[in-house]
Image 1 (spheres, one colour):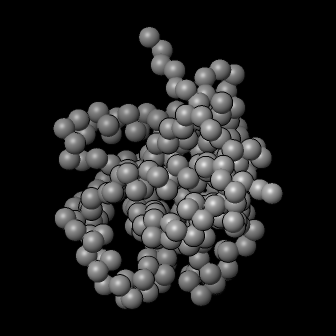
Image 2 (cartoon, rainbow, N blue to C red; image 1 turned 90 degrees about the vertical axis):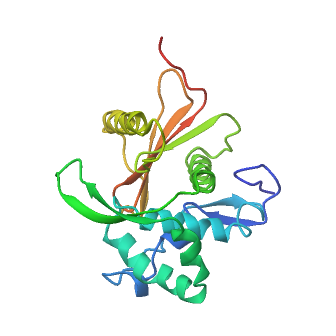
Image 3 (cartoon, rainbow, N blue to C red; image 1 turned 180 degrees about the vertical axis):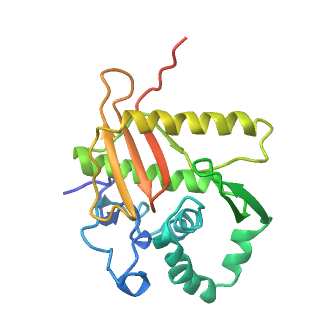
Length: 231
């Protein structure tokens, strides 16, 4: 008998973490490589697997359209998401509602790129990100996490918030901190150009820290346990 990685209910299937839809089949890959091999799975109940396909699709949309993502993500937009939009044209309308064209500057190279800015369903995206973090924790440690969990993405901007500059500064500081903290930790994952993760167990503070990378440059860090601030 096995139990769900997220809620502890009796499991009814195996769930892919991250969702299987992130990994392109050979027909959707620029290089013809099938990246749906050696994927991570964990036991899951119906709620945390079969009923969240819409959330998984939204998660793929946000990640694959991020300016930080690689060419594999772009291919997903042109193929898998293209087919989904063709089947359900209303999907595009709902996802791009309120979007606008903009210009963004690469903080590393100084290059300026044309892009499209759209509103993020933060609650929906954060829920998906937290489920991936819980799934990876279960996979790595062999047990379900039941404590506090905080997940922060370092590639999401909030330009319309009153304190946007402060949020941007905190986001960049967290990314810099993670680069230093995880530089000696090994990367796990059979398809690192789509997804990889690192684990760090500190001497004090959270139970562990988990860093996840999606499609090259889209990264997030998960704190399992209480966060302690110095003061």
